[in-house]
Image (cartoon, rainbow, N blue to C red; front, top):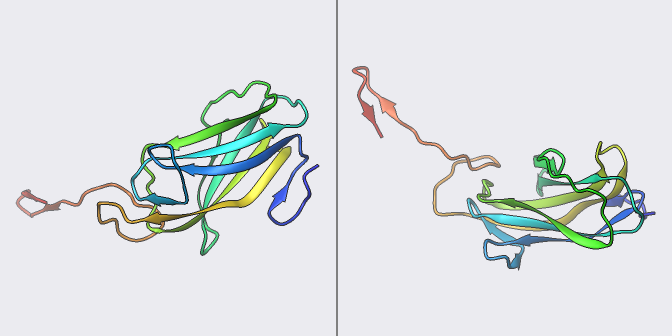
Length: 158
């Protein structure tokens, strides 16, 4: 059984060994840039065979602990099958739409319903997001979009 504390808990059937943030070239890092692609790699070891489950992650703002995004392999339709031994599962985004700031990653290994927690690691990895090439605005998310002005005559100006 995983020792229960404020940052880690669960039954211990699957242990999350470590978590990495990978840059677009596949190198481990703790820094990302707005709009660049990243991969979050979750390394695990199966202690006891369990039915097919799910791996999840959440990204939170480190300053306010506000949830920015969360998801799991089940939400995206990845069937893990029965896991054995050690391995890794990757979550990749081609464009990280986060504003510059400091963020934390939580990860989990659960049964498919997410009701049974095998291992949950809170704030397992902290990373910094640096400004990208474009001006973004305010808030936690850097949304893409454009403004257009239309005159009363229907003319469009950018």
